[in-house]
Image (cartoon, rainbow, N blue to C red; front, side, top):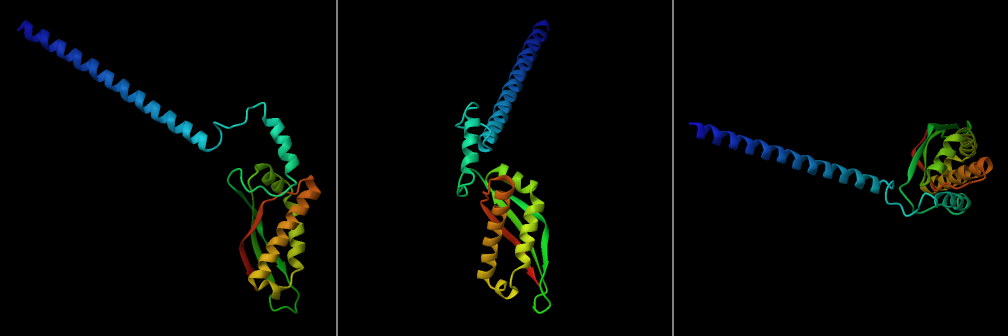
Length: 182
């Protein structure tokens, strides 16, 4: 009987140490998977594995500021959309069949600094756009070509205001997300 108790104690000790080892292995695998997921997320967000060193960033920022007045960027990250809220509403003259127009706009650029400048100078941008929209002929805006021309003119107006206010007039694009005339 003493031998049976001794064998039972040895089996229990082996089972407990094997179970503890399994827990350690599972925990290590979980930690490895989580750290891999975090690193992959940081890499895809552009926060890890960049080709520029920390010392090279100020020089790159200076080059970016100088190049910003040139043509809009076509690559370099996803577009950042910024709505110009609230929607623009303009009235037309009494002689027109269309009495008012409401336009909802979003601007887009790949550089967060451009989006910040748009937020900062929103009143000046809105003023320029209201003046542009209120000077339009409603009959021309009934066509797709008229709307597209107005969109291009609005983009140029925003670039012009940014150039006046900041000395940097780069903006990649402007979109009408709603266009109502009544």
